[in-house]
Image 1 (cartoon, rainbow, N blue to C red):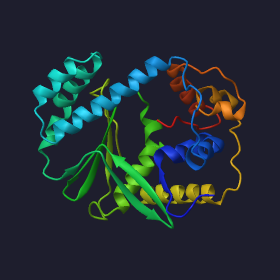
Image 2: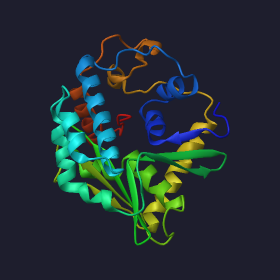
Image 3: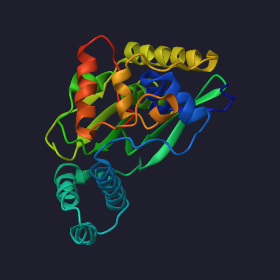
Image 4: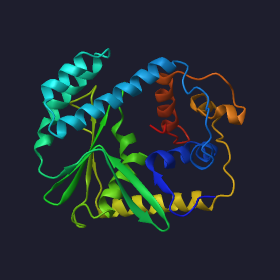
Length: 264
């Protein structure tokens, strides 16, 4: 069902782990008109838009746009969180704009058999031939470092950076998540060669499992369905859950029997 040349990402792989049926509906059948994801849809959409605006502002700043003009425009907007986040970024990571060779908001792909694995880096530069990755986030709750260490995003980003020839093969990449609401939080991760090979093996096995599948069953964790945009296709309720409760549900699952995360 998966054609050659299909490009997997951390979002699509996580979607399959959440629920194979969700992956099928979204990435294979590409169905439209999904259900409302959250009951507080307006808040969720405002949060998503704020995150996207921050990413765009940081990208422009890194590319040489005047930081004062960017800030003035953000302050003229309706969401007063964004200029605060942008100031936090300039204070903590403003030095990144001075790096001589970097890429920002650029997708990079590696081949895994007849398929692709793609990561879109918010920012990546080389430090003595070592790839250093940054990813900006606007989480409302302080993330757990242990959770991020084994997250699909960490595995995919480090694997792609390591195998794409962006630096020396002998130097392992590093990824740092920067939280705009928690600017002093240290969320930096690096895996040695053994750990990177484990990531690669896990990702290959997961992609093999997906591409060999002939059926995509619904998740057995029915409680998860209230946060899924495709629940209406599965006759698993019409009422959406709250966006903040979704994060709490993820943590509960991590501490329980099943490790199921949100796509985001």
